[in-house]
Amino acid sequence: MVIENDLRIMAKQYVPEGGSFADFEAPLFMAWQLNQECNIACLHCCEEAGHFMPDTLNSNEVANFCEQITTMKIPYVAISGGEPMLHKDFYKICEYFRKHNISLKVETNGLLITKEKAKWFGSLGFRSVQVSVDGATAEAHEKLRIKGKWQPTIDACKYLVEAGVTTEIVFVPTKFNIHETGQLIDMAHKMGIYGVYTGKTMRIGRAAENWDALCPTDAQYEEFFKVLKEKQASYEGRMKVYYYPYDVIEELKYRLEYPSASLLVIPNGKVKLIGPMPFLCGDLRKHTLAEIWERYKKSWKDPKVTAFAKKVIADPTMVAKANDWVELYN
Image 1 (cartoon, one colour):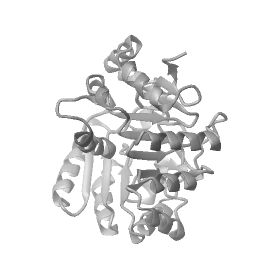
Image 2 (image 1 turned 90 degrees about the vertical axis):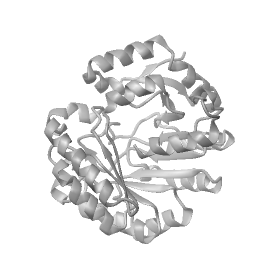
Image 3 (image 1 turned 180 degrees about the vertical axis):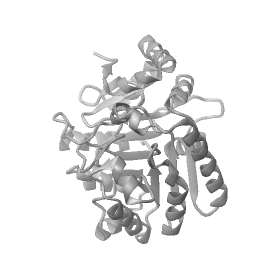
C-alpha cells in the first residue's frame, strides 16, 4: 500500500512523461521475502510462513543477489519474511544496502526488537521500519497473531521511535479487530508513529484458509473506511493515515493494464510476477537479475497470465491459488 504510493512518486523521477514500466532499464523497487521462518503463526499470513524453506538462498547466493541489486542501481528495497530478523544474514544484508545508499524498508512483527536493536536501526538510517500491529488491545492482536505478544510489539514501536527511526504500523482488518481501527490510530499518534497503513485483507495463503473467520462484512468495511477518512483528515500534517480502498481483485485489474516497475523475490530466489498470482518469471539460480527484469516485462503479455487473471477477476476465490507456483521459463 505505502510502497505503491512511493513508486508513483519515484516513477516521475526515472521515466519521461508518457512512458511506461517497459521503459525502465531496471526495477524501481525490489520486494524481498528473505525467509519463511517466523516466531509467530498469523491466521492471515499470505506467505504461509512458519517453517524453513530447504532451498532458501545460501549466504553466497544472497551476497551475489545484493551485488546485482547495487549494480543495476535499484533505488529501493523492502525486506520481509517470514520474520526477516530471524535470517542469519539479515544484519549483513541491511548494512550492505545502506553502505551503498539504497533506500531500505523492513517489515517485521517487532518481537525481536530490543532497545539496542532499535538503536542499530536508527544508526543505519532506514527509509522506515514497518511493524505489524493488529489491534489496540492485546485480545484483538493476539487472536489474529497466534504466539504473538501485543505489549512487546508496542514496546518495539516505542523503542524505534525513541531511536529516531521512521516507524510505521500496518494494520490488517478482520471481523474481530476492525472495530479498534480508530483507537489504534489514536494510540499510534500518541506513540509518535510516522504513519498507519491499512486496507482490505487479501485472500491469499492462510487468509484464504481462514476466510470465513476473518473477512469483515460489507457493513464493517463501510464503517472502517468512514473511520479512516475521518482520522486521515484529523491527523493531516501530523501523522500519515494511508489506506488503499480497493481489494486485491481491483488491484489485479489495474496491474493488467499498468504493471508495476517492481520485482517480488521469494526465499528460494524465484521471482513472482505479482503477489496475487502464482506465476514465476525468473530464478536467481538460473538467470541474472537483468535477465529476470526483461522476462518480467514480457511475462505480462503471456497468454497464460492474462487468461488466469481474467479467471480470478471472474472468480475471486481463485486468488487462493497464488502460492501454487507456475514457472514461465524453462
